[in-house]
Image 1 (cartoon, helix red, strand yellow):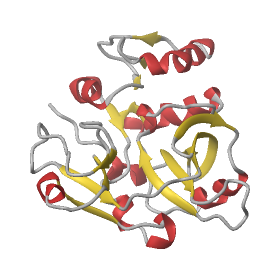
Image 2 (cartoon, one colour):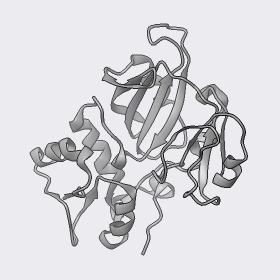
Image 3 (spheres, rainbow, N blue to C red):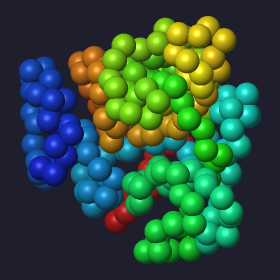
Length: 239
């Protein structure tokens, strides 16, 4: 079965695809072979009880990449350290959604504790941004989701496929966002990793939903079915 919380409105279309496949879609579950699609807060409440293995990229993954892949400096630090930085910087939580990821200029949210882990990077304007759903290191589906910072779902730029498939150190089912740093139709434009996220909590935009579902099911399913090479990417279970 596929557990989709009632509050997860963005997954409605994906739930419909699962139902068409014959997968039972539920808002609550008490046991059985359960997969999950929804937010991390609800996942933390039910994953241990239901035995769901949640794959997610390591918090250290993005800042560990060379600048040739990110096209900017990305640093891991605490929110307290980030508060001392001068000038506009892009700040985001590594994998949770505990606060809004955006450009901040001395206005970081006061309600976020100083010891919270954050990623800080230089401000980069991407001409286009693409979301790719990877399965076993290959792009299973994907689409453009923005141009010049504005929501604009559309076809996947063919150049980003090979770029994303060469990225190291990721779980077998994951989402990677890739940006194009110059005019989208300019073959000289640089490609850059924007971020990586959990497939079980990622907007599909214009991706093939049937193939998105393949990645989601692998990324959040029965703990006993998680392959050995993926176990280092398991989100810690909260009793």
